[in-house]
Image (cartoon, rainbow, N blue to C red):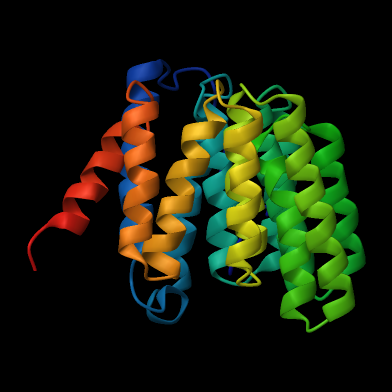
Length: 283
């Protein structure tokens, strides 16, 4: 989760008159640039084995997309790639500037803006400026409260304190995060946000290996919200904890079977059956 990542380079701007336009051309350019990005960043120790010129060529490719097709849906993603390419090279100030461009140029694309702002916070953290990082994380929650990125913030802050060995701060942050995720589930148990909140709440327990506490909390969800999708998810996650973390496959089967029998029409029934078959498969 600690990202090794992510401005502004002057490129020769082609005159707008006569430049190609249209979705097909944009998609083609983006596809090729994305493929090059994958090949470049998937190399082991990419910043060490790849020349700066290789990165610059790819940055120019993505920037041309953002310039030529400013209203195209994926232009914001092209800009995001630029920020990532600077970050991969550990040019953090430039990366931070590039992610800032997203906030200025694509303000209506709230999902990617939230992610860009979160990444700016990560950069501040990597620069050992936690005060600025915390301020930026708070802004993510304030400006984009309904985004999936905002859900990450409480857990991320707790993980920061844990990584720094600040036990008291970590304990307080984990407790605050769990309370926040629980409130989301209690207030809106039938929403997608509640399903996400379960994952983050369990992650808070998992980071401290509090499996009993996690199981006890998940049990309250099946009891208090039996008609909401959080109920079968809670059963499924409990089964996964018993299977993967506590190494008790027979106990896991109990929960997977409850999902299959009580919530046969839920999206968790099929994967529950698959795991039942896997556990029962002759060794």
